[in-house]
Amino acid sequence: MAVYDSILDLIGNTPIVDVSQLSPNPKVRILAKLEGQNPAGSVKDRIAMAMIEAAESDGTLSPGRTIIEPSSGNTGIALAMICRLKGYQLKIVLPESVTVERRQMLEAFGAEIIPSPGGEGSNGAVRMAQWLADENPDWVFLYQYGNEANPTAHYNTTGPEILRDVPEITHFVAGLGTSGTLMGVGTYLKEQKPDVKIYAVEPPSGERVEGLRSLDDGYVPPVFEKWGGMELLDGKRIVRPLESLEWTRRLVSDAGIFAGPSSGAALAGAVKVAQRIDEGTIVFIVCDGGWKYLSTGAYTGDLEATADNLDKIIYF
Amino acid sequence: MLRPAAGGQSSVEAAGDTIGDVVKSLIAAHPGLETNLVDENGDVRRFVNVYVNDEDIRFLDKLDTKVADGDEVAILPAVAGG
Image (cartoon, rainbow over all chains, first blue to last red; front, side):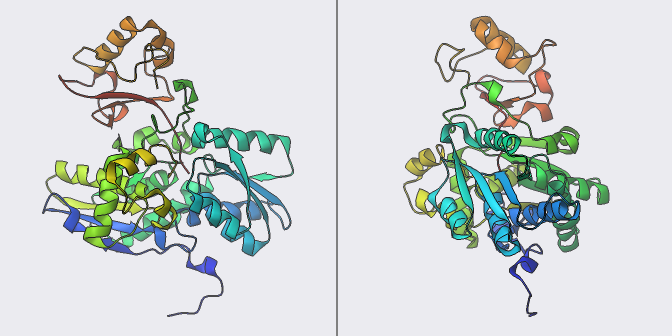
């Protein structure tokens, strides 16, 4: 093994593991790409690094500057690790309805947390960060939902890694948050192998966030529109908390993979695809490990009660 | 999501062979929903997602998507994670 100069050199090049024991169809392989192996623990390390490097090279970010970003957790944690090493101040607008572990990780890396109302969810955090960025023009607002470096990071790294490791891929499944993973990987895969199908899985978004009172609160990330998400995706489905949890537990019990609940949702989506096709190879994204969700009871708590609990927090 | 406009109910019964018909019958029963759900052209609004048995209709046949007895239709605002 090589000796690396910095923890940041470990971002990307994540392993893929065959979890076909979870496939309902013996002719369909299901493969998990373990993004939780990134150093700050999630797929977001890739885009955090790419957004910071892009802002450095175009001159918007220079030593001593302050970065502001809304995040339900993983992007914030990844930025916090990188900012710590690079000497930037970081402020994360974090909905109050996230797990305690997320807050603790941000604090461990020295980020300042600006709480946004839990009931307004991620959309509320985006609105507050936008407002704060407007009020403080000297702060650098990376804005993952609209930053080209987000999907581009996946186009340049995640997509090529998948095709290099699984040239026989027929289907790709990932969670839809900022849409960066799906847009970047999906665009790359379809350019290289036009028959590959791209499926999005959404975490439950309705009952969960009590403050979202009206459909007018809906939000579509600019990244999704700029990268032609409507044309790129072959399907999109919502996965309920109970179903997410059941598959998160199957990942642990049947494959030994300790992942967060949104990875269970992605697996549930992959299983649905496997039921529908005759044969193929599905790659899905395990976006983070389970560590940050232990306090929810996701792995050992009563299933129904925990699903109800997950309905009230933001884990995506 | 539609509770305030649907008389406080979180789920309602609606009839129709396609999602378009279901939406029309919903609006007929709960006129307050109309501006929430559809734009001036009668299309589902951009920030609204409609699902049949958890599948987003934008990637099926949109408002022409067929529905059968017992199918579950969900109407939710688009939400971004991250």
